[in-house]
Image 1: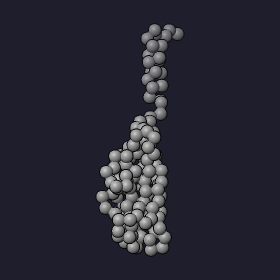
Image 2 (image 1 turned 135 degrees about the vertical axis):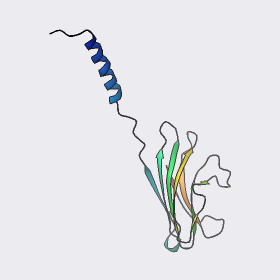
Image 3 (image 1 turned 120 degrees about the vertical axis):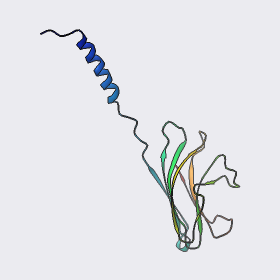
Image 4 (image 1 turned 90 degrees about the vertical axis):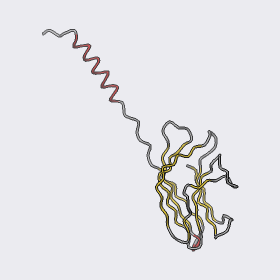
Length: 142
């Protein structure tokens, strides 16, 4: 039986291509969820933030969904500790509007938040009674 000299080269090339393609593709980042809760009874506020890590980006996440339900007598925001925030307390809202007076609000987002190394990314649920003082808070690290 005679084997062509080109056959081993073709086998090597095919094996190399298969080996290159056989490597698992970079898996999509899994969706993660943070649950937040602050206050009690008529002032019970809840929130859920769904996010994923940004592949290849240090200290960055993509916010994909924010769900907020304010207490019956509160307005509630979900915010993150933005190192570039111009607000008085260093937090920036993840939604353009709060949830108020027992009404739930779910909002799909496509928002990448980033911070320099050493600055832990955090989200918080902050609620008030119609004034500027945060009376109920819960903070979680992303």
